[in-house]
Length: 283
Ligand code: NAI
Image (cartoon, rainbow, N blue to C red; front, top):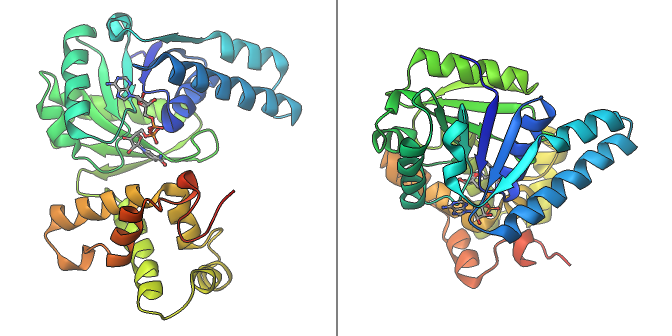
């Protein structure tokens, strides 16, 4: 299957990065968001990152202009009518995602693949909401998208081999590394990462060590580039709690119970870097 025209839905933190890597790989990209402000901000972010890449000598000015020229923005989902692939990166909410997928199912050509960048929701349930479940798949990019090499490709129970192959090939075209994963709560990345972060929070909660010391142990002792509590602050503590709840509910296993201190911080509005305070404080 040939993929030329792509739409990325959601121009937030992830969507703008995803649109950028597709444009850099030579694909025509329509970036869609319900908010014009989000589109303007997303596009400005892409322009800034591409210009920085030129300044650092990682890209020629010609390539930068060509990549930027392959991007369009739209608030109208109907513009997906000529797309071969749509990657959805809207808010992490099942009702919103299902509504977007049902509309896309009506709008896009019958051959189009519908991918979601969800970090925790069941792809199988999203696929079941469409009339083309075999063409629905998870394409889980990591943050920041232009930098991180991994794409977790998640097969819903209904995903066909043709769809999987097309997305694996596309991931390689983006110069990323695909890893094939079955659709279970947290996939592989968050099933392993989040319980580690949750356990780090338990060590603080139980007074075993301070956040600084927990992070120092994992950085200096385990060679992690960033301590788990710093990483949790970057991801957002509300997101971490949400994913722990998905794991807890999805497996019904008490080993995934979210730490009470994590709940308390989220209730206090201490969401990490984005709110100015989490395990650390930010200007
Ligand atoms: P974000 O909040 O930065 O961006 C979401 C965007 O979606 C907003 O601009 C919003 O206006 C737009 N939107 C909401 N509903 C829409 C609709 N119906 N139609 C069109 N646009 C709509 O969120 P972020 O962080 O970019 O996350 C997006 C997705 O990526 C989520 O599913 C999240 O779980 C996933 N993800 C996030 C990661 C992260 O580190 N932030 C990492 C990997 C996946």
